[in-house]
Length: 123
Image 1: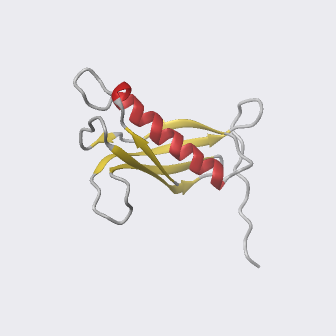
Image 2: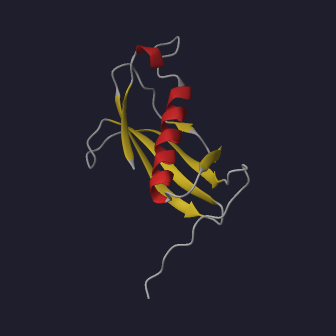
């Protein structure tokens, strides 16, 4: 899953750099969309982010390319690696500005953990 965000003045902190909370929101949303597309019958909630690493500062006018890739599947949860790059062209050398792993758990209508659907296997 890939998404793009433009950093505008409302996203900046008092020093003129991207406020980290926006980045966390954007990568969480991108990874949640990826999980929902991968498991359309599930209801996911975020249960955690691993090491959150801001590698470079981001200023107004920066176009961010956010990627979410599934890295692990459990019985009730799934984890995605989320990365944000400066620039929008895949394949070119775009600096990595942020990375984390985000874990989602599937819940039922009562809010309890629910198993992920079994994958169909080829016969």
